[in-house]
Amino acid sequence: MTSLPTNLPPPSRQALLLVAFMWFAYFLNYCDRQAVFSMFPVLKSDLGFTDTQLGYVGASFLWIYGVGSFFAGQIGDKFSKRRLIVWSLALWSLVTIATGLANSPNMVLALRALMGISEALFMPAAIALTANAFPPATRSRAIAALTTAQILGNVGGGWFGGWMAQQGQWRTAFFALGAVGLVFALPYFAFLRGVSEEAQVETKKSGGSGALVGLAQTRTYWLLCVVFPVFVFGLWLLYGWLPNFLHEKFALGLADAAFNATVFLQGATLVGMLSGGVLADTLYRRTKAARLWLLTASLLGCAPFLHYLGNSDTLAATRVAAMGFGLFSGFFMGNIFPSAFEIVPADARASAVGVLNLFGAVISGFATLAGGALKQSVGINHLLTYTALAYVLAGLAVIAGIRFIFPRDYERVH
Image (tube, rainbow, N blue to C red; front, side):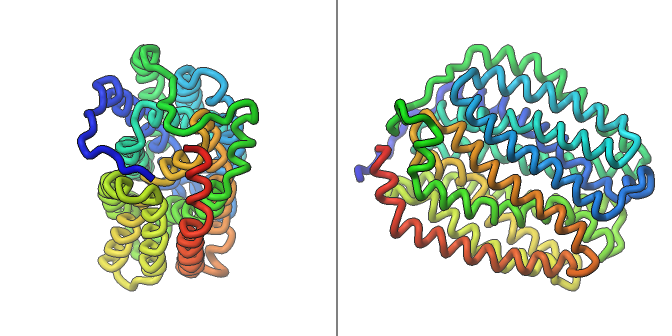
C-alpha cells in the first residue's frame, strides 16, 4: 500500500464551517435526548414511573432510532442529505417541546419513540456529508471534532435536565431545548444550501449492485456491526443509569449526581476523542488498519475502568474510573465511522452509518432496559462487570479481523 503525503493542504473554509454547523446541531441532538435521564426521580414522583418503565425511556428511543437509522441511511445515499438533516432537526425539536406537555408515562414513552424516528434521520446523512468534505488523511480528526458535540451534549443536556428538574421546572427544560433547535434550523438550512453533496471518491463505488449489497460483501464491516453494539451497550448503560446509580449509592442531589455522571466521564471522552483522531490520522500514514487498532485499544482499555465504575467504594475512585473509561471510549467514538469508510464503497457511506446505528441502537436499547429490570436483582455494578468482559472479547475479535480479513476488504474497494 502506498504511503500518504506528509504535507497535506489545509481544509477549506467551507469544510471547517460545515463541521461547526454540524457540531451545534449534533450538540442539540444529544442535549434533547439526554436531558430526560437526569430527571428519573422526578418522573417517578410526578408521573408515577416504575423502574422498568424508566428503562423503557431509553429502550423505546434506541430501538426506534436503530430501525429508523437503517432506512435513513438508504434515504441519505439516494436523496438530498442537506434537506434530510434540517428536517430531522426541526422534527426532533418539535418532539422535544411536546415532551414538556406529557402527563403520563405512556405519553413520554410514545414521544421518546417519535424522538427516535426524528433523530434517526440526522446522523447517517450528517456523518456522510462531513466525511465527503475531507480526504482520508484528515477524516478522523474531522469526524472526531464533530463527535465531540455528542460529549458536550451529554454533559449539557444531563446537567441542564437535572438542574431544571431540581428546580421543579422539568417541563420548561424541554420547551427551552426544543425552541433553540427550531430557531437554529433557519441559519443551518441557509448554510447547507451552498454545501456540495459530492463524495471524495478515494474508494470504488458500489455501482449497479447497490449500497446494501456492497456492505453485505464486506466481512470487516460485519465485524464492526458486531463490536459496535457491544461498545454502545456499555455506553448507554452508563448514559441511562449512572446519574441514578450515583444518586442512590452516594446520596447525591439530582444536579450533583448528573454533574458527577457526566463531567468526568465526558470530559475525558472529549480528550480521548480528539487525541484519538489525531493519532489515527498519524498512524494511517504507516498502516491502513490504524483506525481499527484504535478501536482495539479502546475496547481493551475501557474494560477495567468499566468494572471499577460500578465497584469502587468512594466517589473519588468512581470519578477516576469514569475518566479512564471516558479516555479510551473516545478512541472508539472518533474512529468507528472512519474505520467503516475504509472498507465500504464511496457511495454507501450514509448506508454504512445507518446499518451500524441499527445494530448499535437495537442492542444498546437493552442496556437501559436491563438497568431498570435488573437493577434490584442483579445490580448496576454487576451489569457493568459483565459488560467489561464483553469488551475484552470484542477487542480480541478486532485484532483477529485486522490480521485475517481487513487486508482483502481494503484492497477490494481501493
